[in-house]
Amino acid sequence: MPTGTVRIRLRPANSSRLSFGVQLSLIFFAIAYAGLMLRNTPVEQDFRWLHYVFLAVCAAYLGFMLVHNAPVFGTQSYFEFAPGYLVHKAGLFRAKQVFAAEQMSLLELLPRQLRVRLRDGNIHVLNMREVKGTRRRALLRGQLESFAQRYAVELREETPAGKTA
Image 1 (cartoon, rainbow, N blue to C red):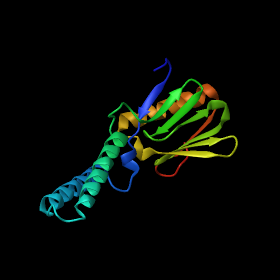
Image 2 (image 1 turned 135 degrees about the horizontal axis):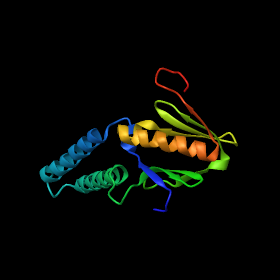
Image 3 (image 1 turned 180 degrees about the horizontal axis):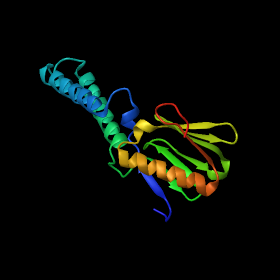
Image 4 (image 1 turned 30 degrees about the horizontal axis):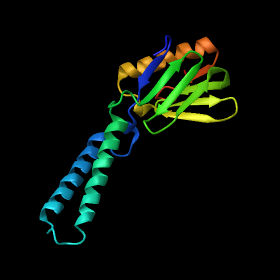
């Protein structure tokens, strides 16, 4: 990593409707079901190949979940503070979103999200549930404050009670 960059790992599973553990449980159940169906289906039946297809799809989804949510090939989901830029990478199969400091008009830190408002009117939202742990949240807050101060970007912070700090 180049000097002056700070990378905060995100957990995309924290913002999904089902938790990572529930997703894993469901996929292991589906794999076990496919295995039992293969074991109990006679070899002579014509639709036996559908069980193999179902098992392959379940295994592929399990691989996707593990790669997307766990740092199997390194950190794939992160929020990075680089000199003059904020970089958001939402996962292995998604492109990086790079925001230059001179294009930003406002950073809004809300209890459940971080909004990056650009001068052209676009808004990028980062779900704060993806930032797991109090140390990572404190690191994110500190990096946002120093980034906003260094590049003269307004930082607006709202506390959980609804008051703007």
